[in-house]
Length: 423
Image (cartoon, rainbow, N blue to C red; front, side):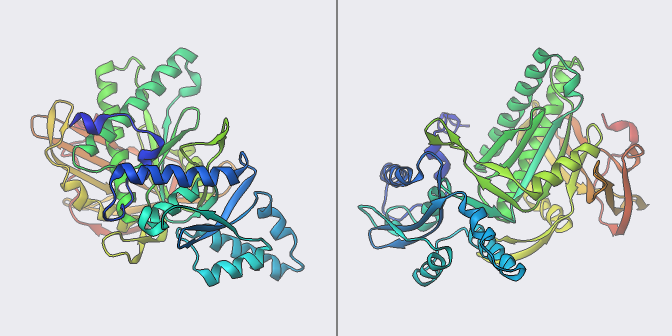
């Protein structure tokens, strides 16, 4: 890997994954980002105000700006249950938009919210000086977004609360190193995942700032390499607790994304709160040490290859991983090159080398049910021992999940040849 790829990143680098306007150098784009950011910062008022919508003009953008309390006040002003629901749907639709509003929709929204548009002048056309997707990404730092189609990972260190503070910091640092090492591996194949993370105290939530099928696939790949690096770190440590034993959950679901205040600025990284983080927290409570759970989801995702929206569920998604994982062959891992990677959802053996697919229902501490799948990852290396991640179906005797559905047999998933082969 080149030194240029490994250099430290600034908050501006997070925007470089967006398509840049033709004819503009990176330095000019960065300068334009800073200028736009400064103009929006002046309106932000140290976090008191949020941008609820925007539309481009010939030389700038026009925004709908209001205190964050508008989110509650707008709904509270409803005069009936039907009006309340209509207002809730309007806000959900508005916050879920990734793009700008056209002029007519912008005016209608301003009238509905009772807001006066404010013009933000710029010395360039937004489309030509930054590109509208990049403008939207900068504007998002000063607003709240409802996201329905983004995947999120939750990694949890087993038995973390029983450790001494010094042992805890060593294990969290080890996990951070595994995250960085996994990111470096993907960079080796030009997979520049724009990921973010926030700590849970004994682990991390991790997500891709970019959205779409490919972005979610990249996040799943990142999770797999984090777990692989962690397994190697535990092997090197000889079981002395220097590297944490992990359990991992992957899910796609709705959440709000926002940027907190840090000193006098919005943070350079976002925070997530919503149904997907709740679901992940409940899933991790029931996950066994070393287990990988995938939540049951079915949602529309953007296909970056043609811009279309496609309905994707958990099973489709993991099956879709096969092609991308094949492209990672030849990468070095633990001193040996990867020969093949198999990732799949487990189920009972159906005969020969065919397996069923089990869907489980878990009950959380509040008595609520959640549907999940058990996932496995087998990494075969040319001159090294294979790395087996996750738990096999026969290892789930202590898993507090009830099988509620079992699909027909699936193709060969290259399961371990013998039970004793898995470490």
